[in-house]
Amino acid sequence: MTSATRNQVLSLYMRVFRIARGWQSTLPQETESERRYIVQEAQTLFRQNQQLTDHTAIKNCIDECEARIGIGLHYRNPYPRPLYLPVMGLATQKGRKLKAQQHMGKQAKPVYLQSHDEDN
Image: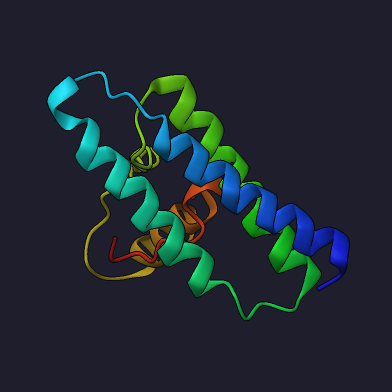
């Protein structure tokens, strides 16, 4: 990782913590739990991606983080927006249709959910 990329990642990391420190939920009773979620999610994802060396993978993670920050601030919701199934998203359990639908689901996954597995 170059020093410029390292500085960008560290500034993004600090920005997330500054956002968490000043976070105000739309429901006042949820403010503390949302702050904890923001900090925990940042720590988890940054540690998960700490060993990346590929510049495109690092750039994708930076783009994902910036997208999640933008969406979270705009909608005042720290949680990732749900992934909706594409049209005809519920195929039968056999044949090509299921494979095609799974492929479409992977293609439809937005940039702000790239770190999440299919399980989450």
